[in-house]
Amino acid sequence: MNTMLRKSVLGVAGLAFAGGLAAGPLHATNATTASPVEAKPVAVVQTDKPDSGKLIPHGVQGAQSRIDLDGEQVANVKAIIAATKKAGLPERAAVISIATSLQESKLENLGHLGDRNDHDSLGLFQQRPSSGWGTPEQITDPEYSTTAFLKGLKQVDGWQDMPLTDAAQTVQVSAYPDAYAQWEQQAADLVTQHWNS
Image (tube, rainbow, N blue to C red):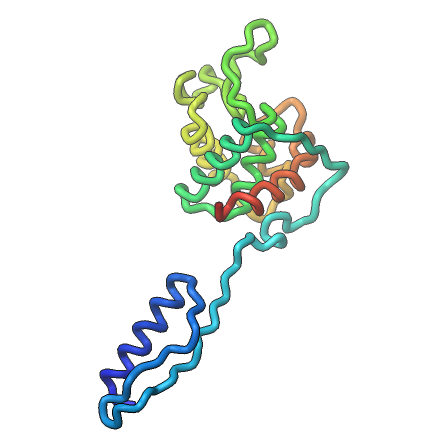
């Protein structure tokens, strides 16, 4: 096969691979013999779902809770995942973030709740303006609040290897430090479902 033909076959195969397409056999014409040349089909391996071993590296701890989500809560899941990707962090960071938000707000972007408010806690992660998390407007922006949480997470030495509840608690400093663990399976399921959607 001459060099020009080889480059064109590889170029087409490369495009088929990069685009995730699995086309049938490629036919080209050999310039020296004018006969068709059949190229081998390109095997495409595409993983649609994150590796569950990376999502829950220690297995879940304790009894697990689960809630049904409405459209707004699912939109908040997607916003957390988008902010995690934008920060260049892996799926595990999204699992920790979603589990934290499930515990703090049930994935609802909460405004001030009056007498039911925990101090001045707001948003998906119940962050407090008085503790330096940002303004009320910033904290109630899902991308901003997730990015703020992830900045805190990145400052936790070895967060990738910690049990979820320890990593979340180190950032959040909650009165209920073990409560995050109960949401790990649902958070992992949500990341599995929405990471590539």
